[in-house]
Length: 447
Image (tube, rainbow, N blue to C red):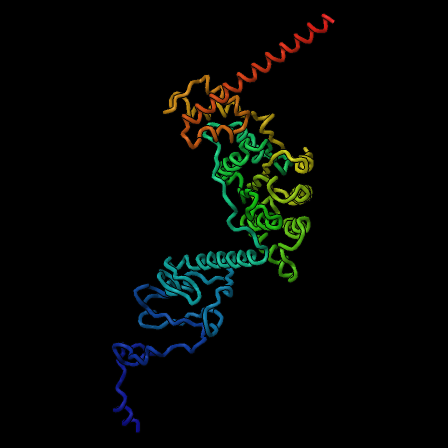
């Protein structure tokens, strides 16, 4: 019997590995063999990568498969759930254990439910973390938009201050933004046409260039007849854009709605909106954000009623003081309700466009730039002075002069003729009053 089996089974050469059958290459069936499904072991053989374990002798490895125990959970059926990949770096296996065969040198591969990865294997984990963060942020923003109903793209104004104008005002507001000193609100006020919106747009441009020192969260232009004049959407829009700057706040704001299914942002009064939506910021340490967060509200007098404006401002102050690190710039006309709410000088820093920052020099510079001797119109300095006086600190008047539909030069000529005519009438009226006064005086003496 033994002789029969000896003839049937050829003798193994001495050079053959003890655990492998005598064959130059493994058969396809042998390739299919391996650890059972769900096993946490990886079988690794000697290949071009070199040693599997640096502590073993090279000679003992040649031709011998190495079974490396890697303790990973048994994968479930279906797509890989990346959220379950909670890796503690302190417990990660050493390079000799993972070897280059796990993700080493890997590129251009895909995991179900994930985007393609083109980076080398040692960056895969960080790419997964970044992907998860962006995905979570996207989901939060989607929920916020559904719950809070903000204005995603508020109406934009493109009216900048003319180059070289309003420099002192912009410098002073910028300094306030850098060192507000507990003045949580900056109020820029002036007459209609004094250039408040242009100041707001130019200020926003400056603040964006100061990234790292301040963060501009939102510029909101209130325009009558537009959605930005809707009283129920200003506070939700402010909160939505704050959530883009403070990620912890986005999650806290979503939780407010998930805890109260009956809550709808557009159906509660302004005071309750401020209370419900800003209180989650109380628990978030703004000190970790080195830069102040700025919100610009332009043309508040065109939003809501005077009562709405007063309620918004008076309730906003207390929340800003408790939150810290968030500041509001408001531009408006000096309406009674707004002026009364802005009278708290310990919280509000005021910038008066008429009294503290007269525009006559800037308007003269604007006329010189558009119509002066170095332009095609070439009007004289005397005429520029006269136009500046007529403007009366109103940039909108100066802008209208330079944009007359019948041409700037003819428009200016008409304005100048009107100005001279007005001056002549004024002088004649003054002389008439003087003569009338002298006549009365003479009549009284005769009597």
